Amino acid sequence: MPQHSFNSLIRHLTRGLTPLHGEREARALARLIVATVSGRSGAALLRDGGEPFPDDLMPKINTIFRQMKEERMPVQYLLGETSFYDLSLEVTPAVLIPRPETEELVQITLEKLTKKKGPYHLLDIGTGSGALALALARHLPEATVWACDIDEETLEIARRNARKNRVNVHFFRDDILRPSPPPVSSFRCIVSNPPYIPEREKETLQPEVALHEPSRALFVPDDDPLLFYRHILRYARQHLEPDGYLMVECHAAHAEDVASLFRKEKLSAVTVHLDINGKKRFVTAEK
Image (cartoon, rainbow, N blue to C red; front, side, top):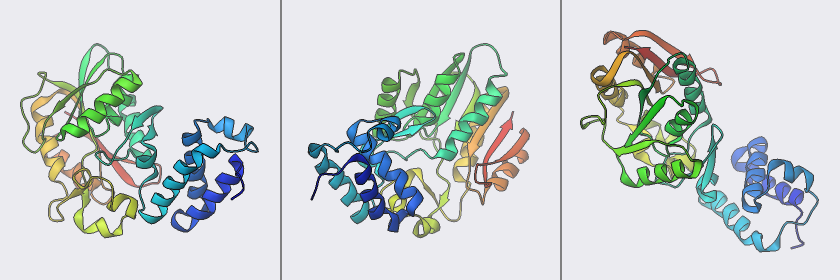
């Protein structure tokens, strides 16, 4: 095979991935793969597109390409990293890949909390890679940010991400379905992106998600889609300070149910927010 330039390699990968992802997403994936493996920025790819792609990096490109096509492995796991709210995060099959929509939950939370003054505590329940906690900690200098997860391997990845991004977050192991006493007396804000996809929907998901991302971070029983929200709400009722905020991501089909649950427990200012795709995705409330 003749040596590829950066541009011709991107075109080659795009053609191969288009049947699985559509041309637009395939092109974005191809550029991401070439940029990450070569250590080039997007600007450098544009500048040096006609330059030869290094032969010694082609085996890695070919392995990634094969695993994406044959095993439907998410590219983020193959590259070992992803971006989230200007953070570079390590991701492995032990953690959920952060979604772009979740960046909107960060923005909504920041808009609420930047109005508050003085030191306070914030908790991220079910932190996974640490995406939410790290993004909020970076932009809220007055907050002491705590983050919990049920899985110790997951927490170790989150800790590495904190060190990598030089952000201070206090991680601890806890199970929100059977929570331990909190590390501090109260929190001004509790955020969470808990499991919320009913198990029956697994067959409708892309293979990259259904086959490779951690089921415990995705799915809830078909007969109890609000399982985690009930427990998060109970925890918030006990440990959220007066006038504190509860901010959660939801399944679009159950956002109104989550909002109703919060209203029944006498939370105020309960609001359903749309994501960038116009879907009901977030619910916020105040104690």
